[in-house]
Image (tube, rainbow, N blue to C red; front, side, top):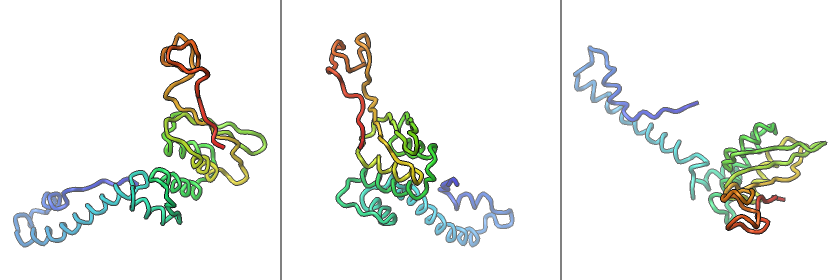
Length: 192
């Protein structure tokens, strides 16, 4: 469902009035009274649509959304609470299909690449490439979204700011011969 904001109910109504009611001040005043209330409602609806979404909520608005999901802030920052809210929603609506989990991760952490590897009999490993600041809550999101009986072996997060490469690539890191690189480098973290 898409929502199209209308900022001029009265002006549009005046343009659409049939000929016999045009230029009638009493009719226009009646129309104006009715449509001003409609415009106020439309403006309120737009405000709620913009400010009550999980991605746009902050502070007290985010707290209200969390309360609706039976969550408490418990000293968490807005970004951490948003992840917990998203995790709760994912748990409720996910059927555990791989495509759903990939979509959830792409939305949540703006992942450019998500790769899942199945491990027999019922586990998966998730590899994510993103610049999003990760913590263990991402693992919780994935675990809650998985199908019942499917376990999460590990989550491998690769930060794509710099990459591993050879000494002839000035943007690469990881080899001692590359100018400005660190010996060994750090390429990914594993969330356990």
